[in-house]
Image 1 (cartoon, rainbow, N blue to C red):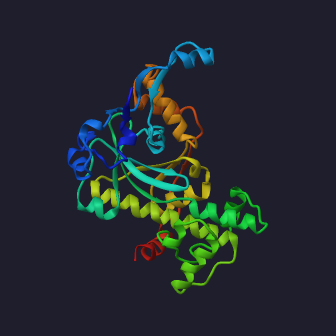
Image 2 (image 1 turned 90 degrees about the vertical axis):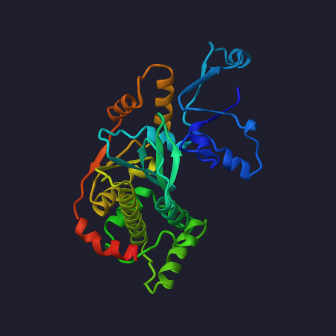
Image 3 (image 1 turned 45 degrees about the horizontal axis):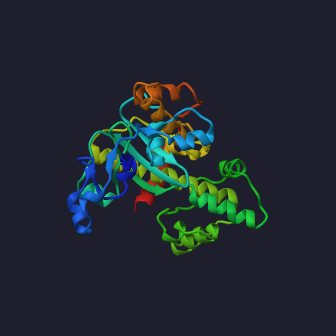
Length: 319
């Protein structure tokens, strides 16, 4: 059976997010006939049994094949252990996917100008989000320092950052060289030199600068979402590998001024399993799946503590 799963089809830019079907207008622009496009099916669809030859090879009974969320972020968002309605998520890893779950796409000039996208989510939802810089600069710094003989763990680097000076410099994470591999400490110092700031030599200071800049970026995106939707966000859920960084989660709570709940770490896998369980009838709905996740993993909650200290750095970030 040939098909296209909704969450992945939605990232092709060939699907009309309002109808959930292929856009004839866009396909026509590319000279593609509509009849070659496969059927779009929702995540959590049982597409059929595993081929009998494969079952015999594996010495197993017939297995149902489920099209779970093919897009990793869609599965991660499905695993957000939310209880309230007005929540936002940050799927935190190499990149930060910052957004909200909505019923209908938001399509206007403001959305376009801010770089937001409407992508397919679980249970007939839309992931309204912005793809932003994540822990990539920190990962590249760690790799560079390791090549220089300083093999420090992420926990060790975060501990150094904890004791570093707050807001020593301003770093724009959209500085283009930061998006490419290489000597990241040198790239960061290149930005500081271009903007008339002193270079950073201390590892803890550089890590703290990256984490502070990420938190300021979170605030910028969350506030843009609130302006566009005219609905305040009450709580932020951070899922994925970045949810393990306690300092970043606290910075996020302080910078944005909202409660942050961190976890689960393996959100993509848990969301995938949840959608399969729904398809198999073991779970009735996505809210029930989220409730199960909420009671199955250790979540950490962070409350805003020093938001006033973030006002001036945020002003500099936005200028």
